[in-house]
Image (cartoon, rainbow, N blue to C red; front, side, top):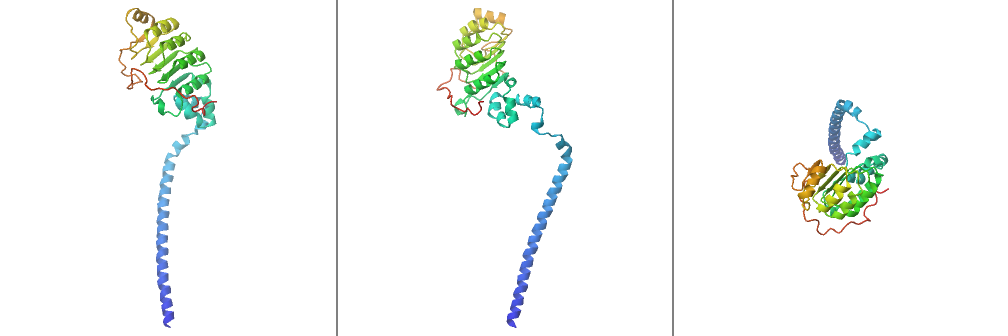
Length: 275
């Protein structure tokens, strides 16, 4: 009798505990369902309110090819080669079109030693992609005589050449390249080792169509005397070495005496973006 009473008492207590746990679990479940329902309702409401806008959005791959091309053209050459062309097959095919490389902008921060790729090799690759249609090119920090010779050989239609902080370019290299670019109309050399001989012998004599010459911060060039007179007569837009660079896009702290410790490039770096 006593045993039955204890058994019943235990069952009652057990039932009460079980019931309590079950009730807590149900409450938690209901709370979760309510929160979920509220979130779902909110999402649905937001989704419904944004439906017209969502319907206006299109898959990037559905854009007309020419629209995609115009968007990618806003990127620099480095971004196009290192990033854009790796997104999908369509973008890669667009990036390989010679018309995408009529204007090559190799803008960079100048930290050549920390870059995982070789800019000179990448630039040559971009020039090759232009298939002779290159019209304008901007080179910053890594320009060399060999690269200028490559441009002159492969881009005889070039009309604009911009060189910024390219200390490795010599008078001889610039003179030789300019003599092979008869259609050149704009030449910009920002902070460089360019001297009087390169300006006079190559640029004024070798580029009869030259209209714009920017030599700001090229302190090796003296535009006094006959050279200054020739520049004033032949060049429509002339920026002298000592003129202000206010508003110029390429503003940086530079060493006017040239690079120290620059060891050149490794030709074996990153060939994964080549054809």
